[in-house]
Length: 195
Image (cartoon, rainbow, N blue to C red; front, top):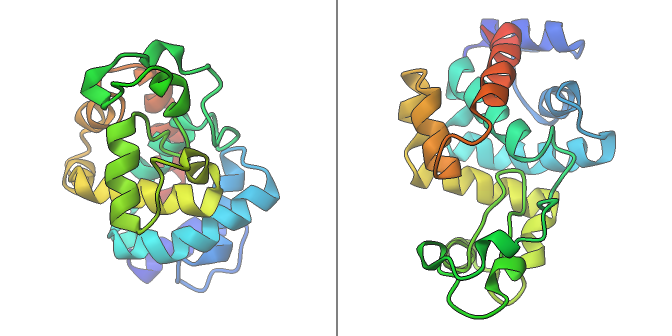
């Protein structure tokens, strides 16, 4: 993101407008969407590293889409673990849930709500953690943010964000169009800050 765009966002968020998106700006952004201060700080700590690496901070539109999707998935950053029991995912071979209890064990966690044994295995191996054995680790905001950025990159979502393609991004994250209207509202809110 260029310095002028960063300063515009920082001014709207009421933080120091130095033109560099870092921990303070990201924490303020997450708080703007309803995240509690302590969690926002932890998400921002990881985000300042992993969002840069993932190219999410390269443009305001990418950041807007990323923020809107995570805000929807995590109920405005309030839920680092899915509210539902996960029973609905039981027996879902498409998620790698092949053992009894997998649905509840591998329910959505982290700001992107990583779901399914196969995803926990894959993203854990890439991060160097055994998420399959310890799925609760993804609920830690800093770990969950790292996973969200890795997921975003692996699914090619920056290119879709560059094309302002909310529908396809939603399908790649959710598997369908669940919550599309809320995602549209959150995207409009993010764009009002960033564009």
